[in-house]
Image 1 (spheres, helix red, strand yellow):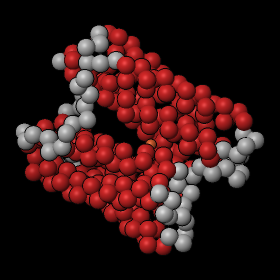
Image 2 (cartoon, rainbow, N blue to C red):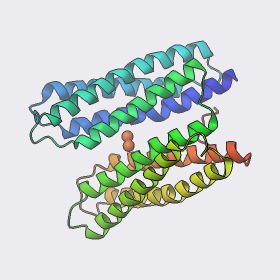
Image 3 (cartoon, helix red, strand yellow):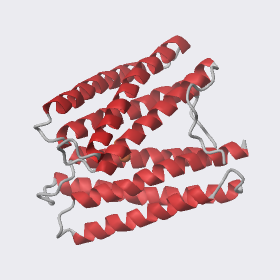
Length: 274
Ligand SMILES: [Fe+2]
Ligand SMILES: [Fe+2]
């Protein structure tokens, strides 16, 4: 049980600290050169999360759970700070105080939602209370479906408008995920009556199909961007970043599926067991 606490903590921190580190880079790239204070702050967050990521890699399942508990608190604190930073930037953009900067408000809101999610996961892990499975299934899907819908919109808006076919594909994904999100919210409002095993199982199956196809689209886009075969203002690391987040969602869906049905995981779990 204790080992599981350590393994799950390290898995979350390794995944999300890298994500937070990359958010700092993306935000920095979107600032204007005169925004030196904001650039410095973003650089500081980059170093903080890089150090956290390295420490999380150095720990292993044999590390004392008390050490991990304290580490989680420290990370929680850093994540709270980056959340405040992201919301501050959102406020500046929405009050038109950064004219000409290149971060979309929805992207800044999006990365702050991811920080909030990470912070909640850490708090849950340290409190040792996990949501009951039927609630976790709905809540995690509502969260991640919106994240996926946002990604499709970012890709569509950051591709060059002359990449008509790819923009069209991205827009289709955006519509598909908006629909899935509405369905998830319907299931949410029908709680607890909607939380039957067949309905939840079908919900996971349906979401998995769309997430797998969006994941494949992101992988293709990433490869094309890396090979400089398409026109866009998407940083190659951003393309890889959104691909990894889709992989994470798929892993979570598979984990739920196996808890719900008792069937083994169809894919290798990325949970750290070193
Ligand atoms: Fe992200
Ligand atoms: Fe994201």
